[in-house]
Length: 234
Ligand SMILES: *Cc1c(COP(=O)(O)O)cnc(C)c1O
Image (cartoon, protein in one colour):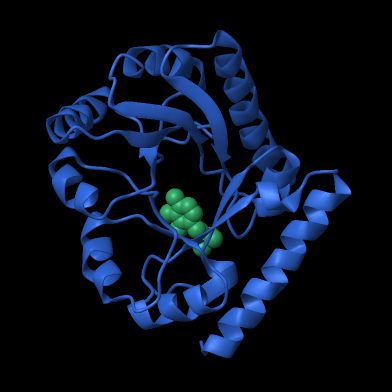
């Protein structure tokens, strides 16, 4: 994929985002586009950054720590969107993630909190919810999310900022929409609880195949790889 191709794809994607947002009366500016750069080379990522991408997301610590230092272009924020193993916490934190989207285990959250408190730092996190309840997927069960967040909110170096989900892999639009509606409902419910140390601000949902549905259901962070960079070979 050439830089020109990538730019065209990003421009097209922005038009799609704007169109779907405006149709339902949402301000497109309120939707953060994360370019998911997993499996892409640093050169390819640089092309996206030159074409207006500001936020990048990776799902593996090791891959991110190899590629990010090689970038020539600047990015505004790096988001960690993958499953976090607690032994990778120090390496991840060296990359300064703006947001970790994928907290779904209390023991990992505790370890992250301990690391941060030693360094006297805070970290924005999202809680990953398994809205499709597929066995293979990470995330907290929808009906356990409130209790999980109550427990995590006692970890004072973690700033809970919202929820993340991966929609069901399906061509049934109703099933996909249902996942996003579940996340939105939990989001509103937790927001209404006004828990200390919890600020429900971000709904991270929607990828290449389902971002339009996600925007209709209230996503304000979408995570897009394939639509920007093409099909992944890995
Ligand atoms: C890979 C990935 C994406 C992007 O998927 P595409 O279908 O390529 O847009 C989004 N979120 C997470 C957590 C991912 O791992």
